[in-house]
Every structure is written in structure tokens, then in C-alpha cells.
Amino acid sequence: MGIKNFELVSIEAKRFAHLGEKFPNIRVDHNSTVTMITPISDKEANFDFRFTSNFVGIGVIKIEGKILYECNAREVAEQWSKTGNLPNEIASEIHTVVMMNCIPESVFLARDLKLPSPIPLPTVQFGKKPPAKPGSGIEVA
Image 1 (cartoon, rainbow, N blue to C red):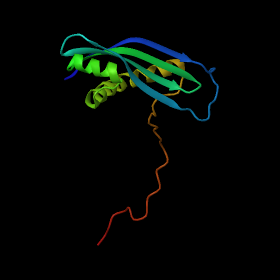
Image 2: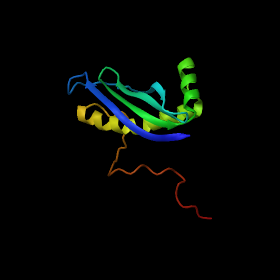
Image 3: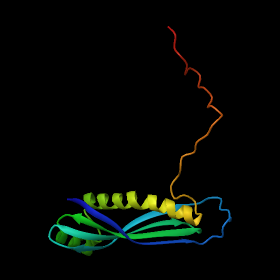
């Protein structure tokens, strides 16, 4: 079992807020959803997905794509169509791959639309050293 192919099918990104508008607390929600499972053979299925980064009140990024996955395709598709759920192992692998591919893409799209980054970026500071903690020096016996 496993992922054999990943492809993006469509990208939609919108900014609702005016450029320069300030928002004190920005919440970004990420969501990954399997929208359809199509068996290709007994051992392969196409998983259609939708990834969304919602910048609440500011903008939205939607990415859709397909994953070719090797599994007991007919059984997985039947279970998903009846219950709307995937086996935990498959769901974990599918959603992890979607997040690993779509979050970096959403960072670049957010930059182009002048939206805040959908993930926290590291900050580099020069000049001030953090104060030394008492007792953090060399111990002499």
C-alpha cells in the first residue's frame, strides 16, 4: 500500500480585505478533505482531495488535486461511500501528503496575494543576547 502519484488540479486564491487593512488577531484554519474515491483497478484508486487555508475574514486559498494510491481499492471506496470514513492508516497517509504538499504552496500564494503566512515563520534576531540564567555557568568542585 502507498502513494504512487500526487498531482494538483486547480488552485483558487482570493483576498477579501483591502491592502494595508490591519487585523489584530488573525486566525488561519487548514482543512484537508477527500472528495471522491474512484477505483482504477483492484489494487489502485484515485483519491480526489480539497485543501483549504481560510484566513478568517481576510482571504482563502483552495487547492484541489488527485492522489493515486495503492490499496484494496474497491473495499476502501465502498467503505468510504457508505460511512464517509477511511481506515485510519490510509487517512493518515493521504492527509499527511496533502498537507506536506499544499501548505508550502499556500505559503507562496499567500505571499503573492499579500496575505499573512499560513504557518509561523522563524524570526532571526541580532544584537541582544538572552540574559544568563543563574547557575548556568561552569561548575567548579
